[in-house]
Image 1 (cartoon, rainbow, N blue to C red):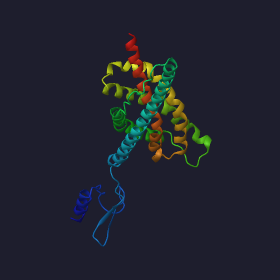
Image 2: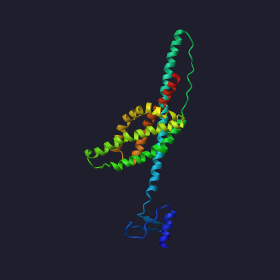
Image 3: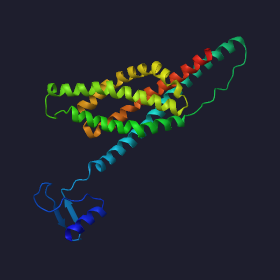
Image 4: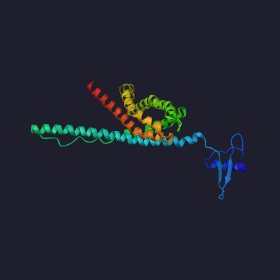
Amino acid sequence: LTRFAMRFLALSSGGAIPPRGSGDGKRGATDFSGSRSGAVTFKGAAPPSGASQRPAIFKAAYTCAGLGVVGDLLAQTITRNAAKKAGQDKSAAGDAKKKSSGSKSNAGDSPDPGYDLVRTARQMAYNFVFYGPAQHFWYAALASRFPTAAGASLAANLPPFMWKVFLNQAVLGPVVVATFFGWTMTLTGRAKEYPQKMRDDAFPALRRGWAFWVPAASINFALVPLKAQVLYMSCCSIVWNYILSTAAAGGHRQGATQGKKK
């Protein structure tokens, strides 16, 4: 009866069922200790691996989603400021020509289209659904397959470190570019243009990404602890989101220009 009560308390409180018996056994010892308030503590009972993974995966997902929002808004801000400056320069040059010819200048500027929040929402959803969880499993797999010792020499840690950097760029980079372009093209109703998009913009985006990610990933694998690697790389993905956003927008503009020429 006591054993049944202990199991019922464990299940009702969300804990794991402790191993049968107390003391040494094939499944390990379990210590049942009580307190003055009557609470029971189970020592040695670990939660299931699947349940313990869920909070970490969710944290990686929403962290990456939030930083994706920051990265996309930053990309849009930089693009808008550059376009605004170019428009002002063009307007100033036109006004100077009109003044020299004696004609009146146009005082009004082109209206600011504002931020594309739908695009930001697409980026956030992609990071939450795929990018964040994928990074969680990817870096855990790399750490398990290519472990590095904290107190080992640089020569001993160099091979696994180089493998991590190489695989990060040779595998994860192309997967992210391909899935991001597919995600964006599908949600914008341009899924048929996906093959041409990959041919035109995939390699330039990867090349820009390699120039940034190789030193960033080197710092990540060499200096950042495993628990902080997703957060660190998510912060770095602000720059990566800018690269992807400008690549997608540039490809869309090029496609529109080619369509007008035809």
